[in-house]
Amino acid sequence: MLNGYEISRNTAKKREEQKAVLISLEDEKSSKYYFEKLLADKKLTGEVIFAKHIGTDAESVLEAIVKHKREHPKIVYEKEWAVFDRDDNSKKQINSTIQRAKDLGVCIAISNEAYELWLLLHFEPLTRPTNRKDLNKKLNKYFLNYFGQDYNKSAQDVYALIIGFQNKAISNAKNLLLEQVRNHGELDPEKQNPL
Image 1 (cartoon, rainbow, N blue to C red):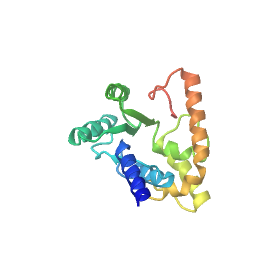
Image 2 (tube, rainbow, N blue to C red; image 1 turned 60 degrees about the vertical axis):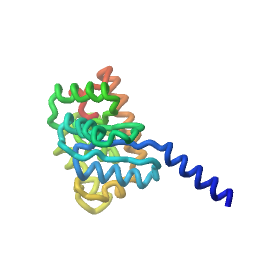
Image 3 (cartoon, one colour; image 1 turned 30 degrees about the vertical axis):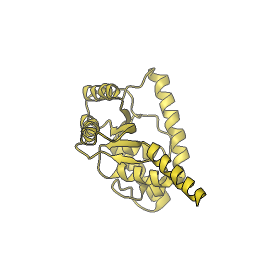
Image 4 (tube, helix red, strand yellow; image 1 turned 90 degrees about the vertical axis):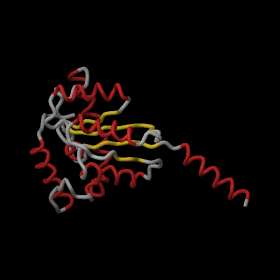
């Protein structure tokens, strides 16, 4: 029994030491489904909390984190992430959101043009400027070819379908990031598409 007690005490201690991660997303479905499936698939430990959605623009995504922390002041977050697309946010909006996030200690993840860029990187490298229509068209082609169905942004099974291509996506994303830094010297979402 002493050994059982020690194990449970250590497990309880580990649970107490784990800190939460707070994530704010620009949408309520597609990227949240993806993150939930990713967390389950990777069997990540620790608590992940999604801030309540309050808007799709960059400023609103960041404000959701601020609001959540104000409403839950006792929770300690190891990391806080604001995840959004470049979309139709102006350069001023993006830059002010990035600066405010830095001031608040919030990490930013931006996809330029859209979330679908990350999905497309599972199938091909991408280096030329693109738009949402082209991304969706290419994704439809790959989804029909590999899975026999159209790409549906709101589908809950997107992660399960593309998980086998994840290493390729990571490699393509790293190469894209390196190319953007080589070409522009620094990362600027206004200038870099794709990113």
